[in-house]
Image (cartoon, rainbow, N blue to C red; front, top):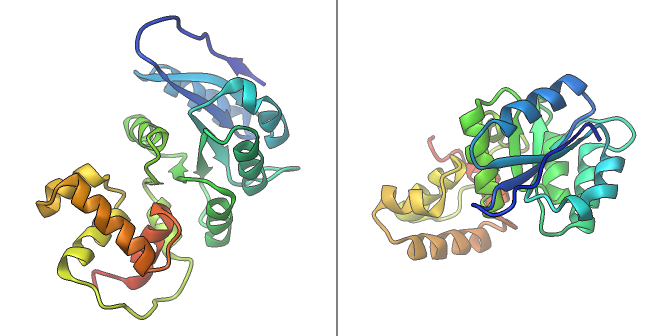
Length: 219
């Protein structure tokens, strides 16, 4: 463990973040940038998934950023261990890779989405806060990465509203943002998203976004 943040007493509840990456420069740089961002507390950084999973229960991170490619214990295995040790923590995959199979493995292990390492700090903070609330994250190139996983599939019969909502889910919009764009209430959007997950055989919001990419809705 390279870094342990101070735990504030009183005041607003900060989003507790843990960073897991075998690259010291990446760990230290991200920790410094995120620690300086409002609302974020970097409680620890680790150079291996083994060490991170051993401390997961004590760290009680709201969001853990996990590098996809690490020696000894890779990103998917680390994600699975973290989720087992601390089910309440959300995992975002840190990536600079363009490997669709690795992306699929992270989702299968329980990651909520993707966070490219070259993303701007405000965008990272937004994605981390969204993940804390349980919103699937397809930030930056993450959406394109997922879109490479499979060839185009046959498009099921969808209403214009369903297509519009799917496009916005694919683009990483929250239910509230989608509601404003399609002039529906957030509760109605939530209903449509749940129905689309069932209709398209998805398992969560991220895999629904994958399906949306595979359908090539803009064609």
